[in-house]
Length: 165
Picture 1 (tube, rainbow, N blue to C red):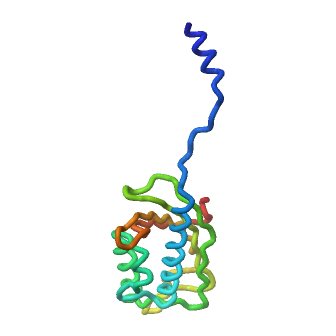
Picture 2 (tube, helix red, strand yellow):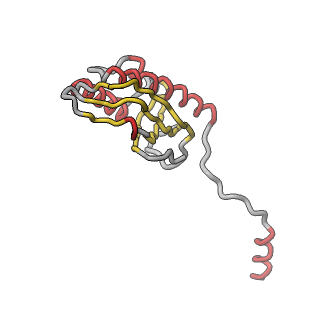
Picture 3 (cartoon, rainbow, N blue to C red):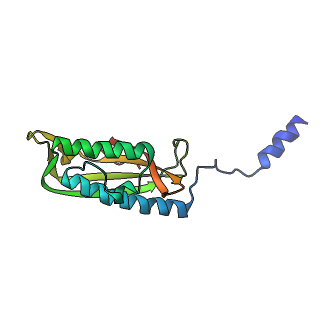
């Protein structure tokens, strides 16, 4: 009888292992929120930060992501960060992220973002950023907020030499 079971199991069609999927409409909505966030963050990068986040970028963030982004731009302003040259901000790749995600994630995406043609200095004239090595792999995690809608609640970035996707 065991031989018959093995033979019957062998007749089942092979199916690929399921891979995580994403909802295209939700992903498209996340890309739209990301584009607002990215546009506003590059404006803040270009002017050297802000004491408080402008409403346009604040509306794309909540929780830890809001706190981290607000703290960074306030720090950049205090440090007197400024670009020398003509910085070119660019998203080089964007794709769904279907790996492990923090609890509360409804959709996630990953980007590769670069800054070229400029150097970042602080108020003392010390170079703190070299756009020759500025490729960031950023993972954005979104949640639904009852008042704000789809917002970024967590983000993680890492300098990389090549975009990993």
